[in-house]
Image (cartoon, rainbow, N blue to C red; front, side, top):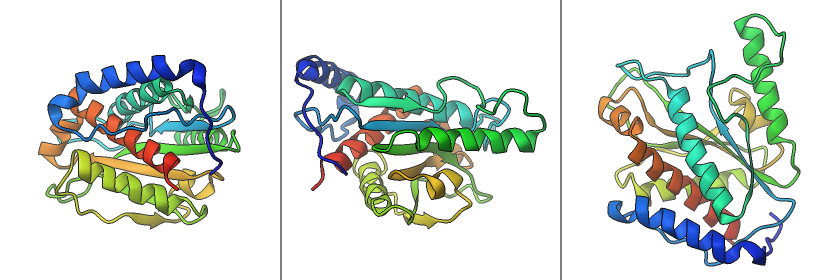
Length: 239
């Protein structure tokens, strides 16, 4: 990772806005709100955020029919806004309920392939970037809960960011989470084929009724977003 340099003209405003955001949404929940005191920004560095699924692809769903695509988007938009307030360059794969397949592509399978190809193109667009894909999990047994990180060994930094993010979730909002951070293969297309440091975050299980209710809550979505933002900052400022 290249070292980051201060963008001094935005430091004061961005820090005030970020700290105000933190106080309003997170102090009451006793979340660790430690953030760096300077803005580690490089003009050519980007944070690329992907909210999984969208449009005709709802992803997994809870027992009462809440699909993951909307939860993914809500969390991602909060992360995006925090990163922008802090001074980072940010690009997203989608900012509304859409699939991003090419115009004219027909058939669900072909549309899904096109959608994933276009997401990967965005992930690889900037040679100096950190890429985060946000999802929700599901399993046949409803007892399972908690966030889980997936990474590919195709980039040397991927395991590092996965462990940092896992620890942030445990530290901030899921103290009982003992889920294993897992490497993936080609089945996780974006993680495997992205040329930048990349992480896929499964924020929780929609198959667990209690956790599904929390994941569908705007307040909890904001807590998740700040946890992801904190993990990004820790990774970028780590030695």
